[in-house]
Image (cartoon, rainbow, N blue to C red; front, top):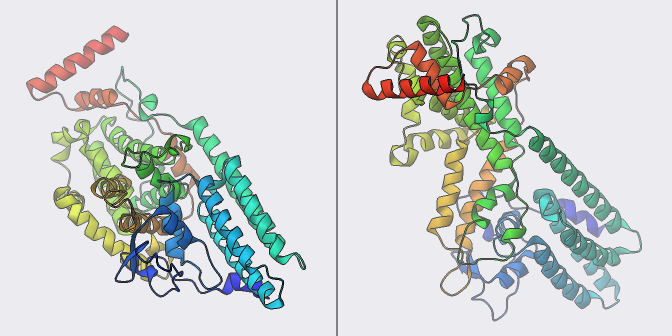
Length: 483
């Protein structure tokens, strides 16, 4: 049957090289005299009007856009047009092409079925990759309208209708799952400071700590990686695109205020902060110097194991926790620590030259992931803050539109390439078994506020200069006033 081509149609691998290589090797739509819109350089699409780019998205009898273009355009289009408006325009183009094929001959009927298969494939890729584009009634209405039109192309055996029905069912399930996840997150989402405890007395040495739950650095690194991958799996490409679409730009597009706010990026960033504060808490609240030294060395080993796994986000969070002032000032403790391994880790996270050392390590992990045979070797979890900053600066450095008014598509090729890399990494199935006891501790153990950390730190090792003495005096006064 003609519709089977939906599953067997050749697809170009997404982002086989740095920029827009997927623009070549595919049949280009006939733009007639409008060859200057869109604009190509060395076979790569670099700019075009919104209308021309939308035309390039919609299949014809002789053309189907490759996956890279579909992903990049659908991802970036929200900067310029609301998804339901884009769907309406796609529907209009489909109607025109459908009318041209409705001559009644058997040959044209076959062409019509082939065209329907391509439109269904486009809708299938759209609903699977960006299901949240269909969260509002307007988008669902436009989708149903296109589906109704395409169903008419194959009314005899109803194959198209069955495929569309399955596609719609999968879409509704994806929307439902994401909605439930957001409701759960809203219920438990709290800022780090809410979990802080202002100490009035020194914690007892018998108090439970991370070492009483897990004393193996490798196992703890694996459990941290499990948590990271679980959280990363709930970040979607449109969440990342909010970095661009929610900023002031030349376009000042009207749909910006209509975009539903999500907490996915904030929640993941909050996890980083929680882990950093947990590390600092575990160190500062220990009474005896020898045990504190052991705790510092333990976290250094955990960070090292995270690096070996490819979990750079947890590694950076741990290093950040140990570099917080309440921990860093514990000179007597650090004098007993074997810091050679910590120095190596800090070298990898050296911020100079735009984190050149880290980026080299990340590139190595990414290359390892591409050729890996096991999920253990496929793990790549970038430092999320740096990943976000890269997208931010790409957006700030390059304009959305060129002086001639065309969309600067070269910019969006690069942004979508980086986002696609992230999406590829987040799909890796965690190879480590979940340890509920360890994860419960990591996710629920009390975390001190910054004030509580300083109190614990000063009680462990007294202030050494006038500035620290003043700080300690202020903290004690605050405690007395609260008593």
